[in-house]
Length: 256
Image (cartoon, rainbow, N blue to C red; front, side):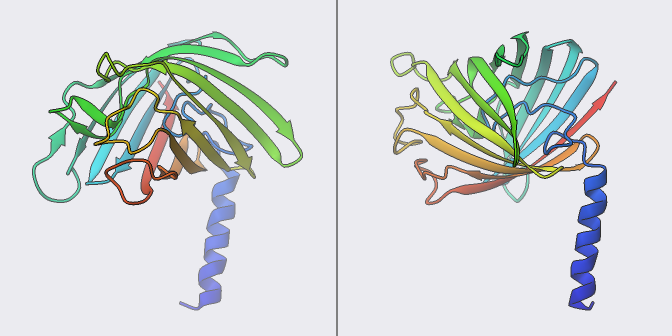
């Protein structure tokens, strides 16, 4: 195929998709972001909506999550993951499914951010049954705060929170904090950065130093469909990897 025709086709596909880009990224997003990258925002699903989310990770790992919102500002969900799902060898399942509960008790106003409390027992990465933990601890009980602003270059949302995971040993477990932001890029893209302080993780088999910085680029492909490309551990503090690792995620949101 002529190279000019090839690139012209890509441009046409991109522009056509942008017309219907109504996922959870960009200026035309119709759904709220529920995660910065890993850590929760104060976002929920609209009443009567459900969401399917899949996340890939190293060693052929896949995590699948289902969330639903039966009431306004309330969300409930389950998730499950395993490694070696893609590839060869025995699949290593995580055991007990992850549980998700969220309640936004204060909606965002012009002057005040949104506040949300929740529980999320789904960690990220491979689950080690001997250590009874994920590579990255689950948020556990958390309080999230989010505030959106508009300016000349688009919209930006600032997120932050504190959490207390159930997985760390009691002598190592401390309240943890995280923060991040999301910036729209045109009608259908968003760039996200987050910092997870990992104050509750002293295990040198998993973390050489404190702190995880993750980034993602989200693209609203079509109504309810958002593709996400993640760059994880940009500070290279995880003991298992020699450099940052990559992940691909896909989200689908619809109504009952």
